Amino acid sequence: MLQHRGQDAAGIVTCGPKGRLYQNKGNGMVRDVFHEEQLKGLRGNMGLAHLRYPTAGSSAQSEAQPFYVNSPYGIVFAHNGNIVNSIELREYLDQDAHRHINTDSDSELMLNIFANKLQETGKARCNEEDIFTALKEGIYDQCNGGFACVAMLAGFGIIGFRDPNGIRPLVLGERETEHGVDYMFASESVVHDALGFKKYYDVKPGEAIIITKDGLKTVRQVTPAGTFAPDIFEYVYFARPDSVLDGISVYRSRLAMGDKLAETVKKLVGENVQEHIDVVVPVPDTSRVAALQCSWALGLKYREGFIKNRYVGRTFIMPGQQMRRKNVRRKLNAMALEFAGKNVLIVDDSIVRGTTSKEIVQMARDAGAKKVYFASCAPPIRHAHIYGIDLADTRELVAFDRDEQQIAEEIGADMVIYQTLDDLKETCSQFNPALKEFEVGVFTGEYVTPVAAGYFEHLESLRSENVKQRLNGINGGGDIPEYRHPGFRSGTYILVFLISFSGILWVQTGVSWVFAQLFRYGYEIQCWLSQLIVIRNGKAFVYLYIVLTFTKSRPEMQCTNPCVVRRGIEYRPYGDHVSWYWSSNVKIVRSKRQRVRIGVRHAVVLTQTSASLAVTFG
Image (cartoon, rainbow, N blue to C red):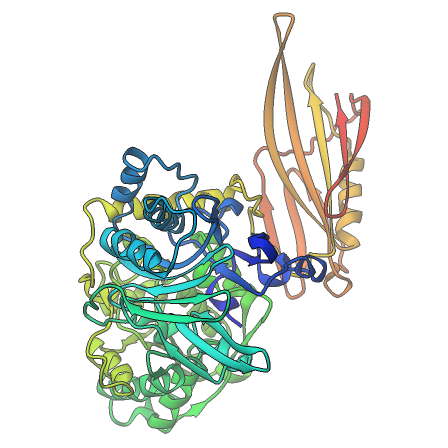
């Protein structure tokens, strides 16, 4: 139900008899990480589950949540948000608390801050008062930022708490059963609706709620609430439209965004908007509600001009500009029927880096659009998001140091139309008059909480390093270094070649033919190159590792056209388009003699998810 909030990793930890913990977590989406046999092994009557995409830290499997520390009491911890004084906290834990932090994740920092305060009680068993005190003196007095957290103490119960400004959402639901009352914390109310939790309400800013293993609930305002300022980007983009957060229906707020956006369009394009625009087209999926309402308010036709491939993840939270650009084309297809010869108003929830917007505008023009107006339900994003949504580094934002005309030129649109900030605030606050403020730092550069010196540079360095790791495939979690088409999932076969260069290496043309046949029958090949130097008896031997990954596709995704590999270029038809990949290190060299100076040494069978073969040559 909440897969849209994180696609990098998923995890579950449950607590069974005698306080024993059972865990299943890893990189990937829910369908990739959790399988029936594994889930059967998760015993107990309470547990934590988490979906992650990295905002600070890396994508390594070691950072998949929930986190765990065994002392004191055995604590499991899941967190949504960002801490803006993480540098200071890391120094405190290292130098004063003498606790080792193994990752760059804010969640691990918060877990250890909380655990350290509980440790100071010196008790064999803790109670509710100990927990509330540890939260006050540890989390609330030491951690600055936006956070919604749930912790589980082995054999004791579950605790949910929220930051003093309510920046990140947290909803508690209750469900009556024949055995008593079930409780569940979640980031969005849609989960409660789906699972039959009829009664649910938002955890208040600065509030903590303890649910013991026996089902007893204790609620306390642990720290005074600050300015109540939920992150407005939840309503613009992140949350599902059928959720209700802090008393505001996400769906109704997006309808209101469409109405307000229509007013802005009339001001900029002209009251006789029908003379300038023929049709309104949304960018699936988030902007559909607002685009439909905008078209109705403008008296224009609404058309689904972009067809979405539902199996491609959110490009918004993919690492690297090149990867995002490539996946826009894989994700969306423009229908010429709705664009040819028309002036089109494309509506999107926001414009962040401009990568997606630029590709979408070009797709519309390729489909025959005469003019392309691009409207955003959010104001220009000119500053970093620091509370748990990884928009981009400031310099990557298309609106950074650009006005609307320059942005339009950058993405190739005839005109860019932005929602005003006042209008955006009104679209949300009208449904909950108690909410006067929102977290809007991405638009104004003014944040709800104080930001520690050097934090922006620290956050950018973490994000940059994370992108490098994910793109190069060097993180400890074993991430796939490049996005793969979801059709390639039924089996992976790995060949590892160890090649000794005593002279010139010739690879015969037959290798190209073998690769071509593999492609023809639905295999994808990816290649990595590394080098090893071995010293033996004072002599240096240079070995070159070429790692080729052969991935078998599902039948419906198999390649029916001939494919070839030559001179390091991979050519692969993908339905209606072709992907090219170049590796400067991998070359297939043809020789007139058509022979290879390679001798087989030995072969070893490995056991992995599917059968793998390691062959060494030299």
